[in-house]
Image 1 (cartoon, helix red, strand yellow):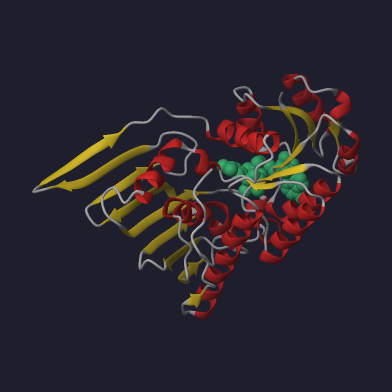
Image 2 (image 1 turned 90 degrees about the vertical axis):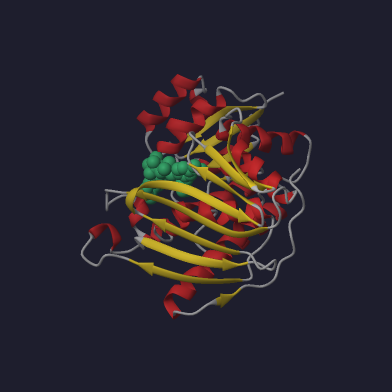
Length: 348
Ligand code: NAD
């Protein structure tokens, strides 16, 4: 039995990653598409064997309600549209898989959670890193205190962008700049691997005033997070430098360094630890897995077995609250405290 998905938004992620990833899924299949472009709809539908009757315009979105083949709606739209399409999707009786960032404000995240609860539908935020084997390995090692307690994290996710007209550079559509788009990976992955929630943040942001790319959204954001264990995470994200996507976690007797930590492929893990007087450095090799395939099939398992997904709406809301505190800190030039939240349950 395969769970049927409707994909909403036929942009880069859907066309280049998600639809191909369904090809290797064991529990999931694409059965419907929603797009503003009739030509694109029909071309993509033909390519993936989706019925013409299961192709919808945005205006017809609510008609998904009457399509019994669709169990999940996967929202792959600009960030500002996530809340509305999630809420309407839940009202149409469908489970929701929503791309990151969950929305543009914590109020929107809360409304999405409430709508899915009211409709008794599951809501998962598509944090693909939580399904990526290297990141999961680091998480397991840290949770076992393999090389002693984690003490310090240094994480950054940086790339360059070129098109000021793209929705990612329009604040009303994107919600922010580098932080919600790619900095979010440092934030969510650090929380994920540590299994701990920060209680305080301090941040800087900057935008080159002469660069049209950054008229509305930040070019760079650098922030620190303090955790109840005493660990400090040093994080940064940039929209105007060469690609760089990496973290190092330093523990009492070792470290883990993951290159391409947030990339679709190409993770390279190096560890170092003290073995008595000897320092050992090793490359850890794990069979790679398509993160999108793993994430989509995981959500299907949650639906088939009726279990709550790990990366729920509350997880997306928590990231949004922390990002709001990061922006507040950068604006005010001082640290911002967060409510203390206990460790999450172990990954199911
Ligand atoms: P994209 O610009 O390539 O695609 C967005 C799609 O939305 C386009 O097909 C566009 O036509 C459509 N759209 C509908 N209304 C629009 C409007 N008002 N303005 C602009 N476009 C509109 O973007 P993308 O890279 O596919 O990103 C889509 C979502 O997926 C975003 O939320 C993004 O953060 C997320 N994403 C996640 C990952 C990941 O690794 N998980 C990677 C890339 C993008």
